[in-house]
Length: 175
Image (tube, rainbow, N blue to C red; front, side):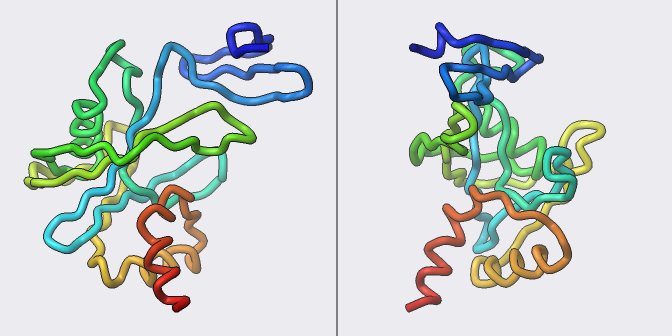
């Protein structure tokens, strides 16, 4: 069976539930994907914190956003620049693709492209679009692990995509 042959018992604006044999999973439709952005400004990692309804809590994350959700065929680099400026208030001169990853392959077909944003210029406060309530954190690279641990202790959830950045730091700490 291919994804095109799957039963679709529910479809929303961006997502649909698919069933193929015994598998039930969520998929994005209309070729919408995501960009996840690693942006370092003068030795500080840019992170965002926002309410995430599915986990019922605020979540600390790398800045990210959908690609092609408003304009079909939107170039990935353009979407990443747009999302970084919207969420964090920084414009990137250069966007370098680091690879495509599956977000949770046992539950969703969603993928995202991890990108590095360089040549950052501050353009505003960020915070996202109206109603998003995004808090921007500019964290010194040497303090990222302790910052994330502190947020977790406060009950803030941690997006697994942060492991792309803190994973090597944690492994180094394990010796």
